[in-house]
Image (spheres, each protein chain N blue to C red):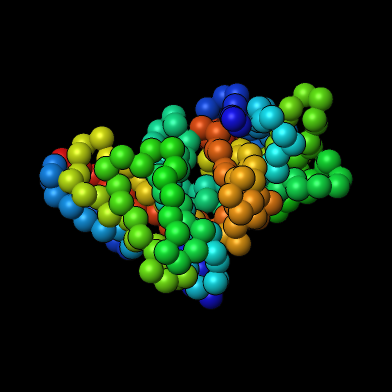
Length: 117
Length: 113
């Protein structure tokens, strides 16, 4: 079984401050890891993902995340928050189903990021 | 490419009514799925399909039915709407592998009275 824990359903940061959104996962095998972003009244879109290789992954809009296997974490960071970063962020883990290798994706509950001017 | 499209954007139903939420994609993706999004619960998988004619249940399938007759379309049917089905519904598609990105539609906001 796989699970995702996002610490903090709401996070507030000042404009220009560091953004840190936490994600821990539980999985019996190494998973693929994703961060998706949802702007108000829109669907989710990919921010970044870890599949294999380099554990520090860079995404769109200056975000990055580091896969730490020993800590089972995939925290999302951005050095300097912009007002346009206000959105809800979802961490997700994906494993292959035994049937056909298709994806089984589990999402965290989401973290709403508020950026204070 | 239009990507993933969903209709309607918003719907109000009375308890017991039935309706179909439409989802279509133009990326020739094998894998399509339906999620519901509720506050504090993230996204939960309702049903998914790995190709035309092949569907399976997700985490919360009760009260919902799906079929997939073409690669492009994956409608979600509510058989007899209940207030507990008030939610935002998202359709997503991908090439299907565990490492693949899912592409989401804009969502359907459903209110059941």
